[in-house]
Length: 115
Image 1 (cartoon, rainbow, N blue to C red):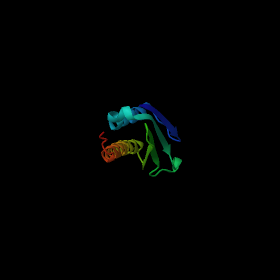
Image 2 (image 1 turned 135 degrees about the vertical axis):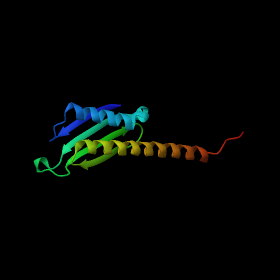
Image 3 (image 1 turned 90 degrees about the vertical axis):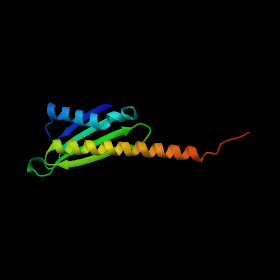
Image 4 (image 1 turned 180 degrees about the vertical axis):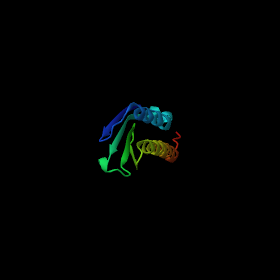
C-alpha cells in the first residue's frame, strides 16, 4: 500500500502523519494485496475562522475496481482521520465483497458442458 499525505492550510506534524499511517494500516491492512495507492488530503476548510472545518479525504485505488473516496469533517483533525479511516475500511470491504459475489453468481450461471 503506497500512502501519500497532502495538507492544505493545515500544519501536519509527525504525530498526525503517524496517526494516519497507523489508522489506515489498521483499517486497510487485510486488503493490502487489493490496494494500490492511498491518498489522504487534510484540509482546513474555513481557515482561521474556526468551527467544524478540518476535513480528511481518503482516496483508495482498489486494483481492478473503481476508487473508493471517503470524507469526514470535524473541529479536531484526529477525529476526522479516525472516522474517515473506519469508513474507508468498511467501504473497501463492501466493494470487494460485492465483486466476489458477482463473480460467484456469474460462475453459477454458466452451464456445464457435457460432450
